[in-house]
Structure formats: structure tokens, C-alpha cells
Amino acid sequence: FRQRDLSKVSADTYNELVTLQPSNSFEYYFGARWAAQGTGVKSLSDFKAYLEMTLEELNHPIQVTSASL
Image (cartoon, rainbow, N blue to C red; front, side):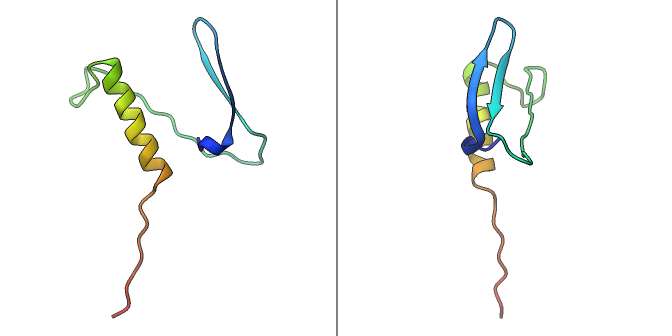
């Protein structure tokens, strides 16, 4: 989700919940990684690095422009 859409984050023993600002539509992504995957995450710090990299990519999407010759 876009950081600007965040309203609050809450948690209990088993869950984490993200509440988004009221809107007519939302865009969000779900991802998972595991150690058994070929390029899998081996530690919590690896997983956090993966999340940060993904967040950076989603907040700065590739932009393509064409140049006229």
C-alpha cells in the first residue's frame, strides 16, 4: 500500500493489522519469501532488506518515455 494511505498499525499475539485511510479504491501488494526458495531469505534481516527493496521499487516505478528522432 502507499504510505500516504496508512491510517494506523495494530497488533495482537498472532496478527498485525494495517488500517488504511477511507477511499473508494485501494492498491496494495502481498508478498512472501521463505528459506527453501532458491534465492530465499535466510534471516530476519534478509527479509527486512527484501521488504525495503520492494517498497523502494513500488514507490519509484520505472518510467518509460519515447524520444522522437
